[in-house]
Length: 544
Ligand code: GLC
Image 1 (tube, helix red, strand yellow):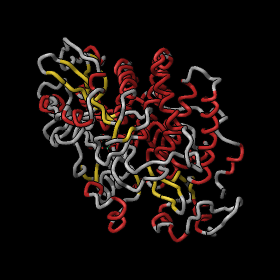
Image 2: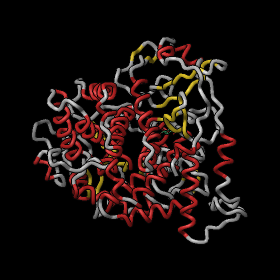
Image 3: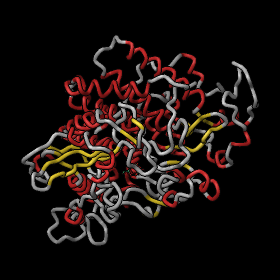
Image 4: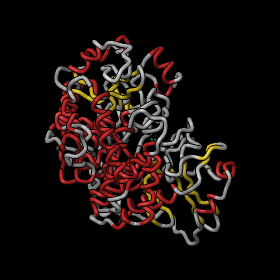
């Protein structure tokens, strides 16, 4: 299916205005210029639903009777894939007649939120799907427009955000109904719930620029002055000096995919792994490879790798070491450098930790180790080669050993385990959306499937991927591609889950394309170039 030839732009734009007009508005004016837009939800759902039978089972688009024809697994999969491409196609957003991204969701049952926007992180699986399908234009447009958005002045009340910050999301605003003028309205965190800037956006942007370059074999976009500038601005912000005593990035709660208070403040693994990935991608994309900047990046990659290996890696042996930690050590030679009190180790981890397997824990800071397992950070660690070969295998061993807990009935747990009772009250601030085993608090997110498939294909263990894909195929299309599932095993469609969530759709498609053609891995996976780890890190299984 060649998408560009089958998709018509939402509207023909006859007269265009410059985005810079938007920049000149003050914050109040910007808020007013942000009306809720009605998207074509009704037609969209109809178009996609016509591919799904009334009993919820996918039907073949060429079946004239409209009856359920999934008489073989192959046909069944084929129709799910068709429905997914259709949904992805319907989610495309156009700006000045050009595709520039995909809506977060095309379910408008709760129109008051911002799912009608193009999210940077949500677009990543869409972009990969388009690249793998041979449709790079939308990805290029997205990269160019978001780089433009980055140069805007970003204010939260009277405070100016760093220049390198990339938007969390944006939408097309039709500012003048009769003149048909279009502008992009971006959110850098200044209007988001919780007012947190997305730390992950810029890192995903660099990742995507590399994926685009790798796929198209066209380095002219990455080498263009505005992309080089955007990349340098992102990196300058991330590499700036401060009060840090570690190479990890200090973050506020809610600064990434988990964008509500969930106790991930500090040095969350997801950001550190993405940071590592982005630094490595940037090295391959920066034009001037001799400048001081490149030197700084190289140093940071090594320091970050050392830090994460030394303090985040956990397996049976390490857990036992921490369990026996001495405290109050004041010296260069301290073993328990962060003064973690062994009594703070949660009970669940002793049962959860298999003898075979390991993972990078969620967060490390003074007197605090967050032992929760976070999916995205661990899988990005494998794709970026932050994890050694041995560790990468151990992460997948853990997934196999703890299949019920991490995969259950619907891949894949965003984190494990859920917080309950008083801990949930204190850590989330009694967030009703993040109750136990729901949403970010141990919910199951179909979008994460593509990452599981990518790492299993990378490590030559595709049976893990196939089992997970099969599980998902039983429900995903039938349930209208939900955003997330609830429950200990992910059995129930999430309480406030959107339907036709674009990254659930795109994640499935990318997973399928990675399985069908492992060479697609080149867009998302880096090779270990042998220079990213200091020799001392060979002892990653022992106590630092
Ligand atoms: C929710 C998710 C966030 C995602 C957004 C749009 O806020 O937590 O990760 O980007 O929805 O889908």
